Length: 223
Image (cartoon, rainbow, N blue to C red):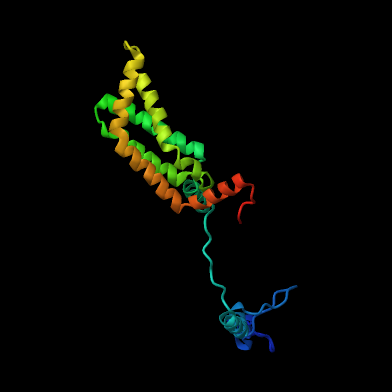
C-alpha cells in the first residue's frame, strides 16, 4: 500500500529548524543568547579598562614598608637600657663611702686572721678607697679625703675586739694587736689615702675646697 501523500505546504519540523538555522523559542519564554558568544565580547570590553588600572598602579608612588618593632623587643630593650643607666649612675654620699671602707677593712681583717693571708688587709683597704673615691658624689669629696685613716682605725679596733674577746688581759691584748696591725698596714694605709686624694682632685675637689672656704668666711659661693 503506498505511503500517504503529504499535503502541499506542510514541512517537517526538524527539517525546518535545520534549514532556518534558528533555535526554536520555548513557549512563554524569551530566546536566550548563547553564553559562549558573550564571554569574548565581555573580555574585549574589559581589557582596555584593566590595562588603564595596571598603568595607573605602576605610575603611583609606592610607600616604603617600615618594619614594625615588636612590643616585647621594645620592652626588653627599654628594660636593659634602664638597668644599664641605673648601674652607670650609682652615687654614694660621703658617709656611704666611709662605710664602704670600714666594711671592707673589717671583713678583710677577719678573713686574713682565719686564712693567714695577711696581704688581704692592705689590698682590701686600697680597693675600697678607690671605689669610694669613684662612686661618692662630687659635693662630698672633701669629707671623704680625710676619712680613710679614721675609717680603717675604727674597723681595726672592731676586728681586734672580736678576735681578742674572752682572752685574759683584754685591754693589753687589744693594744698589742692594734700596734702590730697598724705597723703592718702602714704602707697600704698611705697608698689608699693618696689614691683617694688624687682621684678626688680630678673629680672636683678644688671647687669643694673653695666653696668650703667661702662658707667659712661668710662669702657667697662662686658660680
